[in-house]
Length: 206
Ligand SMILES: Nc1ncnc2c1ncn2[C@@H]1O[C@H](COP(=O)(O)OP(=O)(O)OP(=O)(O)O)[C@@H](O)[C@H]1O
Ligand SMILES: [Mg+2]
Image (cartoon, rainbow, N blue to C red; front, side, top):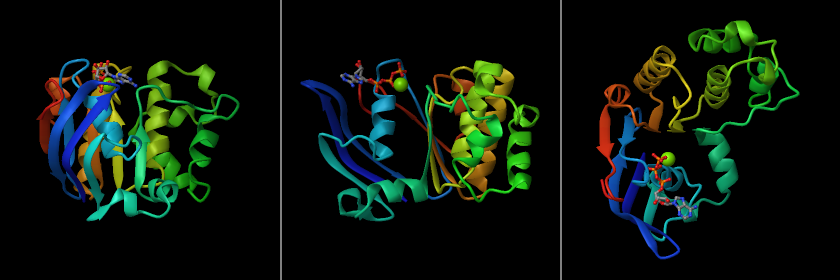
């Protein structure tokens, strides 16, 4: 589904990723671990098409991403993003924040998904009325609401306690079993065990 060939990346003259080659299959749950500054977020930005690598190629469904005519449309149709710093719209309720990501979503699906993430009772609240960890779970729900083929999650449990982190990684595992490809980073070795494949990023190498 996603192939990276010989990817290297420099910020100015600083080489932060070196000759990364990997293949990610449909329905695979992949986790990148590694020390702070090792290059995990940079690699995730490149694999998710948001950052163009200094060298190497990235293929989605066997096609080079430069060849995709409308990359914004491609992202909207295929990719869900979960970042460490998430932005909810403050003047919309939790439910409205979810609906804005997918106007066609039914109340039944919203209820099922938010139930799974333990935030169903927050649907009518505003973002400033809920905790940081709850906001993060709303951001996760928003990324999942479109049922994307691939989900990229950079430290998705960074603000969550261990029980809620577990809920998120168990959900990722289930989604992967249902065919969604999940690509995440984490510092947490216990959570990394939920993945089908773990890569350690060390000094910009796998
Ligand atoms: N926009 C940028 N411009 C210049 N250097 C950057 C930029 N983003 C990251 N770096 C540098 O690239 C290296 C890799 O950073 P990256 O954010 O990919 O690491 P990380 O593994 O995600 O770290 P963390 O676990 O702290 O999130 C670091 O040395 C960092 O300082
Ligand atoms: Mg990072």
